[in-house]
Image (cartoon, rainbow, N blue to C red; front, side, top):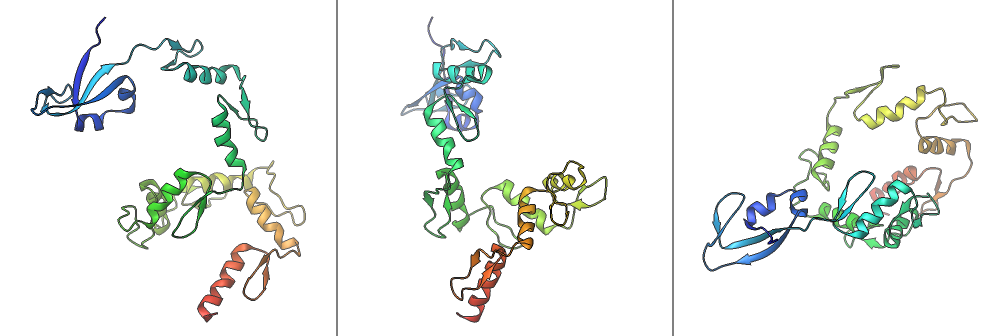
Length: 254
């Protein structure tokens, strides 16, 4: 059976959904004249794509009827149903279909950060995180706050940031009527009202809504001061206190 061939212009190709493009094969075509007719907008064009349908994949999942274009994709998906992963993380027991996926996952458990920003020297575990970060240093970055000039890496990050400049606190606790700007803060706050809350200081019985907050609180009961200033050797219990202290050296011209 002959394959069905059609054509699309560059503009329509860009507007196609990822689901549509996965179903077809696109080959670049060009002509000295506008001899191709776009199947999407019916406009003649001279440069665009020839479109042919992919052959129907024979790799279908028996459990959920998902269809895959490769045997590898189908096999990796099948492990989700059987849980018989060939590669498994020894630290969190998450399973993977290929060795390369496990290798990528293991960086999450590592403290190594190989990707470094040449401008501010921030470091990252993944290359895509560094690429996203570089937008912050772009003078043409469109995601910049018009109130404080802070540069954000995406539109969604900018929208979240703008909440800081608002006095609205739409998320309200039904028990104590505390209000919050962010939903995640309300969710964390609810741990305080949980009788089974595990984040309670054993020394003073103070209740916290997260493990990190409890850990930070415990420094109050400790004599350890692990954060040391490299200028005057002053020591502090918390990193944030050290940062504030270092600002004084900058202001004093040290």
